Image 1 (cartoon, helix red, strand yellow):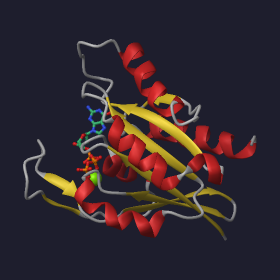
Image 2: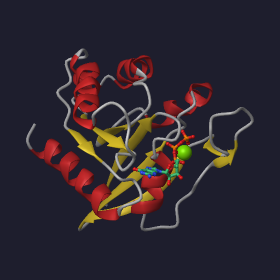
Image 3: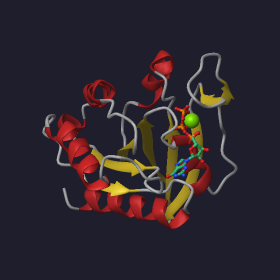
Length: 177
Ligand SMILES: Nc1nc2c(ncn2[C@@H]2O[C@H](COP(=O)(O)OP(=O)(O)OP(=O)(O)O)[C@@H](O)[C@H]2O)c(=O)[nH]1
Ligand SMILES: [Mg+2]
């Protein structure tokens, strides 16, 4: 069986754990714990969340959700290599954490390793002062500064179709490079 790895990174509360809950065909291994510091929600990922789906005959995809809080970033070392793709989640309505994006891009180095990168904007269902289109352009520019021309999609991490479309986008990137 061909086993591929998708790593899901991004801000606290952006929906990394939720995507795994939505997509995984096995009951996911989740590492949510009550956060000891105030991050605006009760539970946060402290290890690697894991889910798995079948992509095709003899192809399995492992979904790895890493913690959004930087203090847990040492766990990234176990999901750094041989990636099928990196999914960056950005939460609409919050200031873009470009420092964190920079840190992750430098860490995974997708340009050099030719790893597919897709960016998804979550929480688009809520209204915010900044127009969603403008927000997306700002996000795009953060990646462009790294020479990455990554597709940017709107995503509802709770919605299976929305998450599936995203996988198709990553699949397409892997076929045409
Ligand atoms: N309305 C809405 N809620 C969402 C969306 N994506 C995720 N959520 C919800 O936002 C909350 C936080 O999502 P999580 O998946 O726990 O966030 P996370 O990225 O894993 O956060 P950390 O593990 O703390 O880094 C959950 O209640 C999700 O169901 C979205 O697109 N729209
Ligand atoms: Mg989480």
